[in-house]
Structures are given as structure tokens and as C-alpha cells.
Image (cartoon, rainbow, N blue to C red; front, side, top):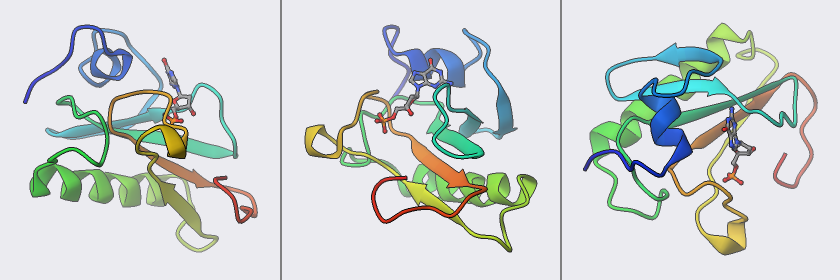
Length: 115
Ligand code: DGP
């Protein structure tokens, strides 16, 4: 697995285009969503390209994504108040960017739909 030259999240995850990063390790990075739906709305993405969580994502990448989501929640002060981790996969989920990403949302009372 590698990066996709046409993918915006590949470019952000590998610093070809810089963003507003809040976490980074060897496998994943996290940056603020450009259209936030909550006071904290951070995207956690792998550095390698996977279309969505429906892909054959290696277990170590899945673990790194969820580890990063928790680190983001800690750094944003959401552990006590609560937070949501969401991933959209495919058209029925409304996935807009075809690079696997977790949304980490918090900082307000979240409703029963996506956000
Ligand atoms: P989804 O529907 O799950 O594919 O959500 C994609 C999210 O990505 C959406 O909330 C907006 C965000 N987004 C799209 N392009 C960019 C970008 O170039 N930079 C940042 N920071 N966020 C982006």
C-alpha cells in the first residue's frame, strides 16, 4: 500500500500540503476538519492510502487510528465530557473523501444522527 497522487488526504497526511495538525505518529496523523460540525472536529487518517474502512486495512493501521483518536480526545480535554468517533464508508454513508478517515467529534452535546 502507498499513497495516491490525486488524493488530498494523502497530501495532507504526508505534508505535501500542510494542515492544522493535532497528532502524528509513524502510521497516522490527525488534523482539524475544514468544515467543523462541533467545537472539536478532527480527522484521523492513515499515511498510506485506503479508500475506506471497507478496504483490507492492516490491523496495525486500524489500531493506530483508534489510538490516535483517543490521544486527540485527551489533548482536546474530551475524556470526561465525552466524544464520538465516526467513519463513513461508501455512498450510503455519504463518504465525500475517498481516503479512510475517522471523525473525532466533541465539545458539545452530540445528537443521534452523524454529528
Ligand atoms: P466524509 O463525508 O466522512 O468523507 O467527510 C470528509 C470530511 O473532510 C468533511 O467533514 C470535510 C473534510 N475535508 C474535506 N477536504 C478537506 C481538506 O482539504 N482539509 C480539511 N482539513 N478537511 C477536509
